[in-house]
Amino acid sequence: MQSKTTTTVMLGVAQTLAWASSYYLPAVLASAIGKDIGISTSTVFGAFSVALLVAAGVGPFAGRLIDRLGGRPVLVASNLVFTAGLVALSQATQASHVFAAWALMGLAMGSGLYEAAFATVVRLHGQDARRAITGITLFAGFASTVGWPLSAYLESTVGWRGACLAWATMHLVIGLPLNMLLPRASHAVPVSKATTSTQNVGTGLSSAQQRRAAILMAYVFAVTWFISTAMAAHLPELLLASGATLTAAVGIAALVGPAQVVGRVIEFTFLKRAHPLLSARLATLAHPLGALCLGLFGTSAAAVFAVLHGLGNGILTIAIGTLPLLIFGAKGYGQRQGFLMVPARIVQAGAPFLFGIAVERWGDSALWFSAMLGLSACLALVIMTADMKKTALAPQLS
Image 1 (cartoon, rainbow, N blue to C red):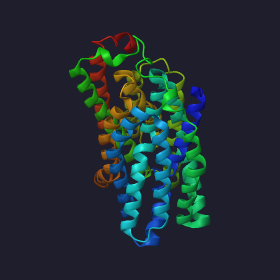
Image 2: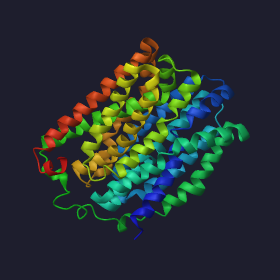
Image 3: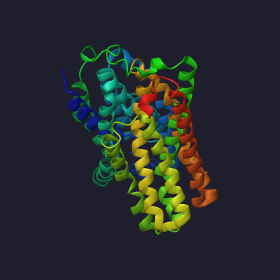
Image 4: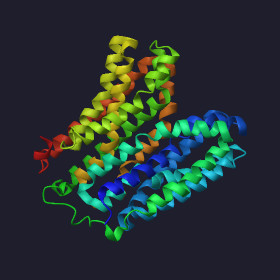
């Protein structure tokens, strides 16, 4: 059987490609696409929002297929759909073509990004998948670091259409073989045997507690994805509003990516024995704390804010994969994960627009809005922790 480390590396590389060629693509190519086709850049981002909504609808079904068949066939299919979507986008000549291409990309995103990768390693390794989930995010944390410069280089040399075709080719020659080499479901650790009496945590919850935990978890995921997407779209603008120069704002915003990776390293090392609820509670406080520093000390604390936001966001990405596993167990993980992420995908689609209105009206004071959202997510996790302490989870949460 393939080792867990090998599986983690393969999925990590494949996820880096998947994120770089989809989620991080519009930031570099949207302007060129709009100019060539004769539509606004905001229209291109509108098509991207459609992809996120499609991904929200596809997620639960993809997760259920992974629960039944394993991740290999679903991820392989996602590479083919990514390829088709990128090829379709490269041939677009009007707005409807762009929307259709991104809708197709949404099918691939709903079945080929983090949730699918996390469900795959849970199907393979059961409750022992936490470190594999963290390892995958460590690799894919460099998706923007790799994707943005590469997309920009391709756009400058072969145009945006050639860039899309290049990414499509990479799915066929890199992503597809990596996912095809994943272990088959028949070689996976059966989820019924992957838990022990101390790890099968979901059975310690009453039905009412499970429902409340699921609602609270979905809320936390939605809030954190809203904040993450809003900052990705508006952080330089916020820093400019706080008094930073353009050069400083861009440079400080660039700290978020490396800080996310550092956050995942911290989770992988110092927090590896901590329950994901503890890690998540600490992570949700990072953005509000950074906003407080920026509010109190102004531009001089801008770098502190960016680093704290990045650290928290990096750890929360892992929590999205590990919290459902530790609280509900491995059985039915894929489908459950898909449903839990539906609200997050929906609010993610609207985050740039909605937070943009807040920035337009309130300037850098819009950060207080995102900070309050972060605190509400922490409160939801505190409530969840209180429920868990009433069950057999209490020793793990101390």
